[in-house]
Length: 104
Length: 489
View (cartoon, rainbow over the protein chains, first blue to last red):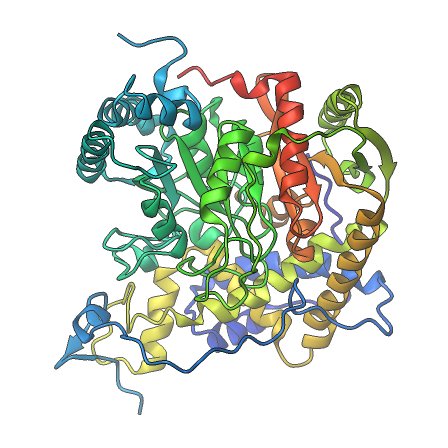
């Protein structure tokens, strides 16, 4: 079995925090899920804080594994997906358009 | 009558040669494979979809062309299994999620175009962890994949279906994707060869994103030569992927170059405290084979790797929380009954039902580590650790041609054993994630068995150094012959 460092921490992610975050990412959770996730998030985030031990003063962040430069190309028009094909996977559609729920 | 060894377990290379020399027809081969799938896949569950009719039609077409003496591609007639997060035009691509249960892509991924261009047969789509989030293929909405060597164990993940299909002789070759070990882990657990190429070597166009800065498509085969052959086909620059590299090599052809005088570092951190002691002992003994074939081996330590796992998860989940925002049930995918609901309620309900537990947990964790007040502490800090990891690998590769150690710290575990404990599952990725953070390449090659369960050796190379690691893997394989063993099914 892999050993896991399970840290006790002074801060806690409570169910309210889980509900607030899940609301931000548009995921409806049941009460049971929110309670289970709060417990699991505490463990996982506690482990993530292991990186606090690393001295990263004067270290630049790496957003990307390769040192890529911007790639430019000629702005040429090429065919895009036909309307019918683009709508093929839409659960609801009307008059050649996606049908979304009301926003206001 | 079947020959011995079983025709479905011949190497892809040998199969192709027999098809070209007309000793074997593509039709005979593909029907034998389809028969095998019927025999074993109810127990293994490697496939989510098998394209029986089109596979047979394609095989017959190849046979016609071979008979007429026409030129055929280098994968002519070989049935290849594709992980179900890689888009196949007109063929359902689900990411093993309820969210994409009925998604039919309107286009092919670049690698699928390339495979078709070389006359490969896309035999089916393989099971995986939902959205590639997992280490055991147990988070699949459609149920777990079982290990061909011991059906009570997991096949590894997230490309568990692809590795199990190759291992069990249900495909000649297969394709997976590797964000933090998802090709190498199941390759190790199923005793096949799986490669995570250098970031950018294989186009990601048509690969459904999990964590863009880490995702990479990789080949899986029953031996190193087959894996190299497949890499020859799927690698290469693609203008449709903005992070695609210009490089492309003849990996297969370079396998026979000498390994004499190569220097390999035995990476101490891959034998860390969480490693099963039996694996440490076994892999260290296996490394002696490298010494015996003329490779110079020396212990090396990169202490920063202790922080690779948390840094990896913070970055991967942060990227995932943003990537998976696209699933709102409007343009494609699952949409819950939402009559009378506004946008926010409809989307939240759809995502609450459409995503499985692990996916929801990861999106929420990622949103947390990106959120105001925590961004610097988690995400930015992890990106800085990533810089240090890249730097230390770069230094190590000034001295060594490759680094070695185990692929996995544990043996294949029982189905269900770890599903309730996310952190224990994440810890299994400890030896594979550093490679993705650094963008470098690594291959897992079969290195024997402990109590009948497969063990994999991981050979790690610098950026664009696939030729070197494949050469080491090939020389090791020729010495040990582990890839000639197949599961009894």
